[in-house]
Image: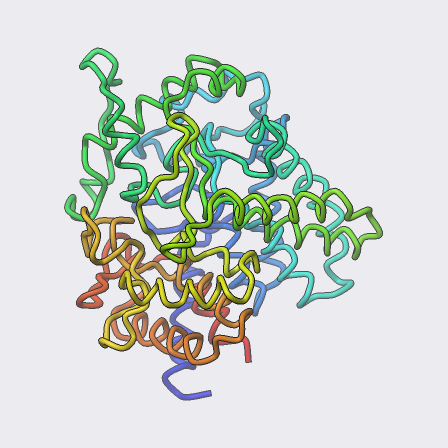
Length: 434
């Protein structure tokens, strides 16, 4: 290992230590003071390389706030931090009879990478992980059962998200057609005060018009007491999202492996994973453009907007070999893999697409978690040259620019929160894998 890599490893561990609260790891020191769902799963993967007990605690703490119906909330609030928006009072999660009695949470979810994180820990600890897995496994199963029961009412094998934040790619241009179609009167827009634009550059954050619609959806859900049937009938936002379903497919396969390790029956997880993969190839695959597209259940149409999420099925092993080759060509065509031109991989949105921004959150910047998913996908399909380049690019980006939340794909400059936890955690996973 090179000297510079050893320094980077120490720095990454320092970032995680700085954000550790004693119970969980904050995504960032000021912008994100609570526990976030998929952040904690990805952070756990980094911890599993050198601090397995903390990796286990990260996941267990999160799942202690799981709802009675299996929903895993995207935020678990620390009551000591009241300035974050939307906070406890705006979500009103207590209006749901399924919400936890002794924890304050949001009322939406994030991508299901938790079983994948648990399997990573099991592979490193072996039988020493059994007590952890025994406690977590039924909660993981309940989480996946909730998704297929409540978010796939037609039994297609594709679950839907009901808020842009559930995709993890909050303000992606994918959502523009739906959000622009939500014509709200001033009376329909809830009163709120953002906190994020007072902490980081407002140019880096979602626009107010989008936030109005995020807030509207939250209050709509709260008004229905988070009843899934009522939301399904009334929400203007219901999308079968590529990223969410790809990660669920992978997580189902990983949960099946955990089931076998515990002597449990893996059958239902294997069946659902296979069904989701078939459904993604049958309904979401865009043969012409070599990528996967989201499906708007309200309009009954594919959303023809090209984002990095369209290539994440590589991580789950969903495309066949020919599809995977087509996806590589597509990535180069849309600027997601600009290696030949010396660009920085991988922008979160089509660099040649309408609405591209190199600095605004999920409208173009490079994110280390997306790079990590793509790297593992390249490795899975034997795309060694691309994997080596993406690995080197990711390491160099953080080494040169710092542990930022996201990065300008044109200049490499860091944006959003500094000392960002999953940037540190996933970099550790890459650096320590050998």
